[in-house]
Image (cartoon, rainbow, N blue to C red; front, side):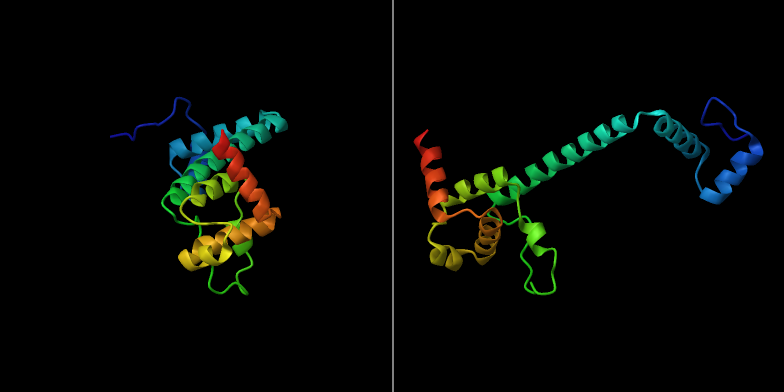
Length: 155
């Protein structure tokens, strides 16, 4: 019995066999790869970059939802490292976009007295470090936080 062909156009058998042998791909995968290459070669470079930007924004939105759900459960998105000297990525990993950080601080303001750093430090050390990292990164003072909280709650 003859194997079923996955696509409509039959390619040169010798080329197809060599491509399958070298790549380990199936006929369908080779066909799809060829289509993708043809699309990329003929697409405007700006179109490709715009599509990549949309994909990145979709990923950001997905991650933002995940971070928000963790913060609502009083978990930090990534746990601060115990060995901060050897972890060069800790600050980058723990800095949130400013709007998300403000939302997180306002959410926690009722549960933790965020502007009283000693009380916050004694309640949850991970959240304390997380808040400090973001405060330092955005150079936000406690007065600004209190004002933001007052503005949101007055609405």
